[in-house]
Image 1 (tube, one colour):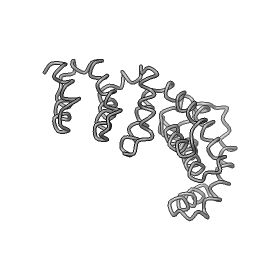
Image 2: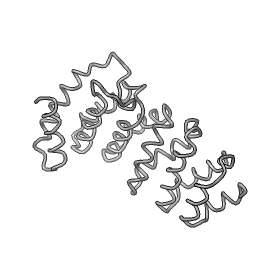
Image 3: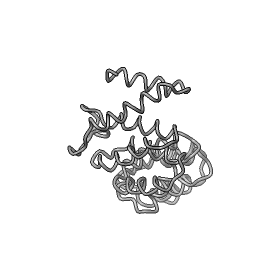
Length: 217
């Protein structure tokens, strides 16, 4: 198969044919041209094409993603607001691979976003591999717990809990900055968790109650 044939299948082929060729293609054909085709598909009107593209960008082009320009960062960022959750989930992952440029984009957009969009950004920040910039990540998450919007405040609390564990074995949610006062952060979280034990949402109430029980409050 030639590069042009591969590009044609990726752009115009059936879902079955796309998966078949990308799974069996020779490694030397996975070059910048194919990367660019997958980037194009991130904006496709069909959600399965968007998922196909982001999945294989992560799986086969992680080194390319690490060198993303502003346009590509924007394309991946926009997928955070996709209606198909598996696309959103993979977008979180791809932003982690992109690294600093992605966190800079998330930070910039957070402060001008609606509460609904802030919630998605908070989740991307909290679940991304940005541990080398712990203070920057926590700055956004701590801002989120100040919100009057309950969904944003709860998700910010949840991501702070995940990212401030004293003995984390996961690099992604570890704290790299020793100047961060975890005790002070945990005191803030305790107050919010207690508030959410009265939530009418069972998941929110149970999560908060279980957290308080786990930390002995």
